[in-house]
Image (cartoon, rainbow, N blue to C red; front, side, top):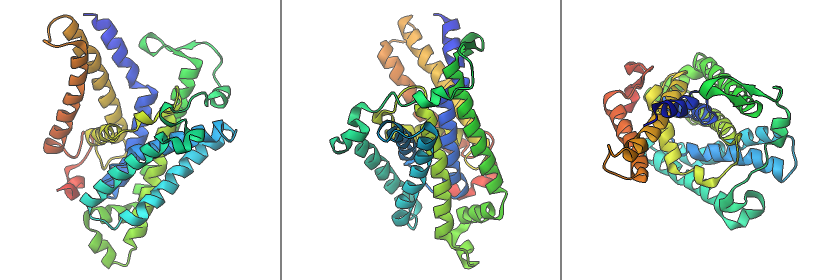
Length: 325
């Protein structure tokens, strides 16, 4: 087995666009679940709306790339309002079911032939990053070293994503230290007590859903910067991966989602490279494809173990997670 190649392919995910995108989306999910106690299983829909909003704005309407990204973020906010009005008064388990259904509805809307003119249905959209790449401040060339050897466009994708992630982290950190954030944590723990103090619980939940939705849409934009937007990427498995990232780092923490995304993708990439190599070497009694599928089984087991033994995550405080029980 070529362990050098395995480690090199794994190291790429330390600062890959997909890792940054997951960190952003998980940060939005932390606002929903970690701080507001909203059991949202439809974060894939927010990412899809962010990515499609950006791509359609550029390809169909010829808007500048930065305007398209703003439209993608506004799309995430609008979807949060549309989703929140009928669902935020539901009990947690019913809210989870409703958000799963909403996520699937959004994905299927992007695959239907009705909107083929705008979405290209199941084939998705590409060739919309030209304006973004033209704004690249880095001269053409090669940057970095080893597994992190990047072209100018690859570097620009990562730098832009890290900037968005830093803004999102700073925003969440500021909000959760404010009176608004303290009310939100109170709602998470006991919304009836907060309501008895005269606070509009529904309004606070809606605001949290919008803030987290915008951050999730930003994750969707970063997710599509390297290549294309494809509806098959936004299945429920994406949402469950985001939950694994969130619980791994810590649901009620500011930096937990970022740490969780890095750990998740490094481990996932390592296993995805190692297990097929073990199968090829005859160490595992299975084919390469079966070994690749085994990675997802391990992710599911890891998620169950996290929920059972450390629901607060690596950076989380057990006292911050009492609302889970």
